Length: 137
Image (cartoon, rainbow, N blue to C red):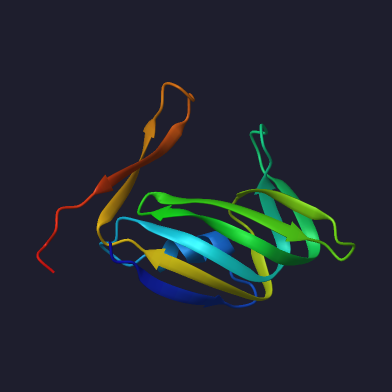
């Protein structure tokens, strides 16, 4: 399996989730955001078991961010800390705004395609990984 690294640097005011989704090249069917660091001025996370994201405003450090990325969108989780060292984590929602920078590493998986399909066992749309046929490359 070949993986292609795509490092990203986001600028102040960028929406983290939107930028990750937009970074997936046309025709790519699967990628993982492996890790990221940086800072946010607005944090929007959906916490476990809650239907809507919560919002935090201030100076936050990104401790970790990771997840799957596909043409239909991204499924990202993130942990951040505030100036007092309190840590918050959950599903990344739209509207996480970069404060100074975000440095991210996206890994493209050209031999795979991701989809989301209903899983009867969980009741949610879950990741389905499909290998693509080799194109002889």
